Image 1 (cartoon, helix red, strand yellow):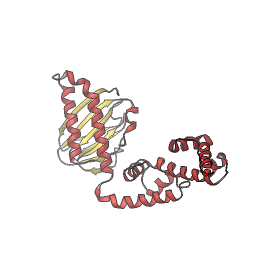
Image 2 (cartoon, one colour):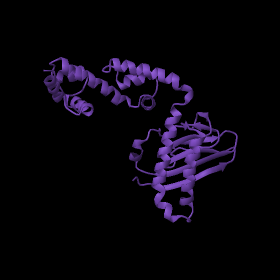
Image 3 (tube, one colour):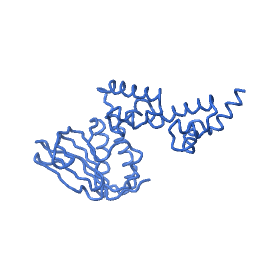
Image 4 (cartoon, helix red, strand yellow):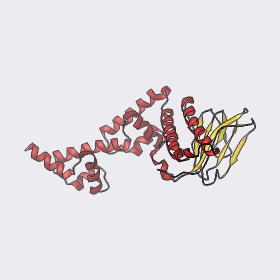
Length: 269
């Protein structure tokens, strides 16, 4: 279980309509999760501000500039500052230092967790629950991750995105070797992270594994219909080395290309 330290939690903190926050180095060596319950003006560089709706969320990394202010109304936010190894976040999809908006329901669930932690952290009434804080943070970030993934594909734009991604995927299936994940991402016009999230949401598999699967089918065809060496097949399939091709092949077929060829020839004879 991850080790969290320097935990500071507060929910529904209210500020005046002229509130402004600017900190060039953020909260020093702490992560900071902020949930904005009201409309705000937000900036990534401290110079150019843009309007952001309520229920916007951001997870700042250590020493990251923080700049936001109220949008001519009472400013309300909830937040959690904490320290943890960056490795903790490797299983999550939500971005760092990037503002995104989630549903009111998801905000309510997340803030309820923060409020429970705030009571434990800021009072002495439940010392026996301090040990539960790491598990509560795990639940919070799992909830945040699902909320982010849900927000990425809102019902309004699912149809158009699905049509685009299906076209890109069909192109890859028909000719997977030149249609690399980098190439597919470029065709979509989205960032690599966003492309991967949408792709997995639509097709139930990440684009790297999907492309590898279809390249393995090509390798199988070469093994069945030709006497080409593994070196030549690796070259034709754009693998950087034979050992890497073998490892990919084994991942999907549970046997080496050589074993696959021998078994096919034995069964065909």
